[in-house]
Length: 437
Image 1 (tube, one colour):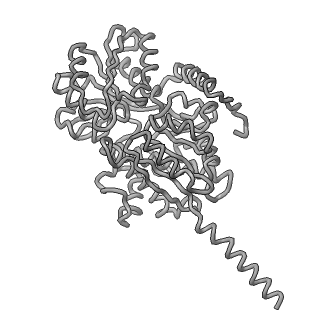
Image 2 (cartoon, one colour):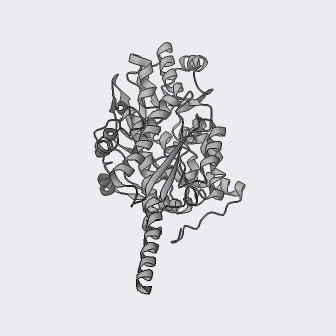
Image 3 (cartoon, helix red, strand yellow):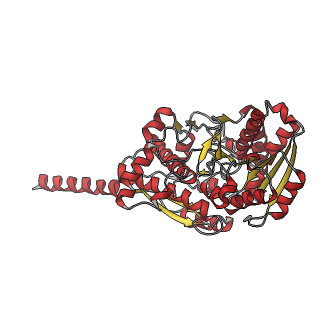
């Protein structure tokens, strides 16, 4: 009798211990904007992230057996609402939310002050503070795949190449039409530095958010007649800028947008007038990648897609899928060290900092050709800084360049200096980046 009771007790204990392992979930908060002036760009990105989370649950049963629980909070691209969403969602999970992706440089600036205390990493893929590439100071920020300084540097390199060398930019006129916000002002230090080096004339033309009214700015463009216009816009500002360029007769072939100004919602509203417009491409458009086949089979075939299947493959949808994958792989990397269970924010931070997605791993994940390999370190929270130029031919995006890598020999001293200044202002002791970091 005693043996049977002991066996029953042990069996019950084993069953009890097994239940939480099955029931436990990894909480992933999703800051989105499906409403407001920027919704046309925010929606495809949000759908891409959500569909990838659904794919991991439906195809794989979660990450190493741990299901993903995700919840959206709509910020409408407003900093105050973004902070409110963060505060509401940060306590969910075990014991904290795994990570946040603000999808706004303004929200990123605000959360950079909060993340260290809350011990929750920020994924700011292709946006945020450029100096946060220095992980020694910005230990909780991860501007993976490129900062705005990298983006601006790539565009200037491309303009130098098409003119026969960077020295040929001397006395050229380059105008920056930018969203008058932390986002739009981010590339200015790099563009000014390159202007000093190569002798081009830089004019800065701010546009008040949301960017519906730009006539005065484009009258200045017509008066100045710059050789090139760089567009640092978002949402409705982008299509409005292209329409205004048409109105003043500025060639779209001479316009180059950042990677947040080079998606379908930016060109389609301008109709035929958008033909010839150029932009950076962090990732391609199209749904001919293995991950899209998996999403179709395991998500949309089960009627679990976040939006219309016709949106799958758009530039920003694909970027959302990449964003979701990076967050999942940071969790998976963390689990390799801390065990197959829900990860706290501090553990996921370690996962981001030790992320290493080489060509073979990207192929296994179904992302071959969709993004470049990336390897993150304590010193380098950017991990990769490459993009291509693509051009709108009236119906689709066509690549006009191979991958161009930002010049880190130029960028890194700027990053280090700005990060050191921030550390001094905030009284931060930079990490020594030892083996245990």
